[in-house]
Length: 150
Image (cartoon, rainbow, N blue to C red; front, side, top):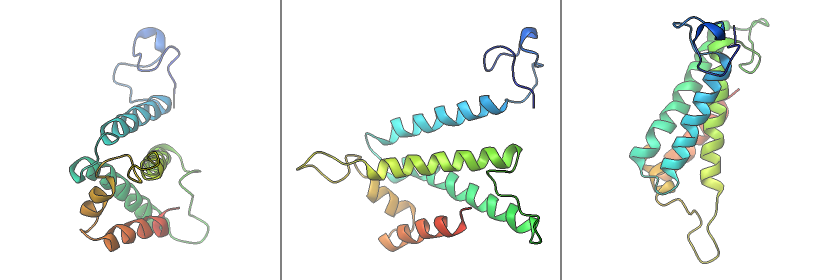
């Protein structure tokens, strides 16, 4: 893969990339970081289920796609861990890892003494609503993510 010879997202003649060139690895990672930063900005003031669902769906989809890729490779030493894989699979793995870090960050931040345990209003209620309507559903989703992750 060719990286731009100038700044990211530059498709001028000086960059060495054609105008129709796909995003480079550095550009894709930057886009993912910006999108996750935007998700945190949106979720910090309030995290109802309709705001939280796209992030959870993204994590679920990417874990399912990795499971399918691993299953299609089969055994016999053919399996490549996503961190060592190349291209889209590696980038999907990194984006999923970052999304899980965002969720963990949101769940672990605490309010000041005398305030609610989580300063993100509706976070846990939103998680429960997105993941089956019961606390058992949320726990089951987290367990499935742990079991199906690589």
